[in-house]
Image 1 (cartoon, rainbow, N blue to C red):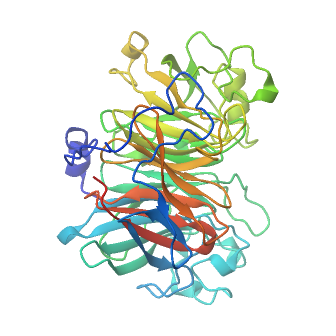
Image 2: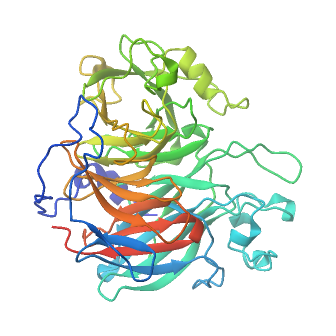
Length: 466
């Protein structure tokens, strides 16, 4: 973990990295206009037509190329094996221009073949029991967690790969912090009982380290126990926002007692729209809503306190909605950029194929003065057109400001969304029946990393980004 001085100064030094990019300028804005639905097939050229791949894995625009840098089941530097089902991830600047990648693995307890210890758990004794959150009575340990990859961007080679958190379950997404760590989230609410020794449904913090080292598996319980998906930290306040992967989920924020020290406790709250008690943002046609969530309109927000955050009945979202919180359709990827927090709702929208929201924090976020200058929530895009986007999932914000989202589909694409709401295709998976996951750019902006989850592959994509 970074030293305390780094944590104390992160509010002054972090935020969106400006790399001098001029953005994409090779297409006109005529699709995705905010405030109205996008016309059939109205997707922009972006980087150009996606080209056939001789290897039959990824279609990319002209001038772009990819390299598989990690495969599940292969040995890592620490003697364990690369787990399967790679999901959310983020990058950090390492020494000597190296890229540190911290990567989730959405592996369940009963899936030893995709775990880090070998299909017969033969490598489990090589790790101290205290470093495994869920030992599973030695029978069914937690097999999720994170791995860390040290990547040399100049040579295109992985120099080190190691287990960095062990014993958690179904680590789906998460989010990077401005102080140099990754918060990984359990997408489960499995409770202790039988072979299961501990409750699950928590977040854990993993430092981004150059050398092999395990994070202490400490659950951040005051961030709430629910079906977590992703988090995002506002670098200006240190407040953490969270999504919930449920068809009737909520959006949460965690105000830490000490910014940059999540384990020191804090307050959990839920998002509500001012003057719109228990508002349904999902816009599903079958709901026949009298007042659907408008596209492109910034609505004032208030944050409501919530109790019993360990939620033994897994009812945080139910109680929150009854008390006035807004309801969302499968909150998934979340990322800070352009002075706001973007998040995807995978099956939101009229045809239930995806929405992307943008929350703009108040200048007084988290203080008593925020009521006078509330944050705002905007339904950024809702195309209702599978030719444009189909079940947006993990997302990131590119250094030049575009939102780049991975589709959760058997034949997915990576889709970019410009700040004006227009779309373009960046890649298409033609090799595997698997979603994309974990898309993120290197600190330099030269490389885009993404996982092909069910194939167990991590891919580095390079090309003429600007």
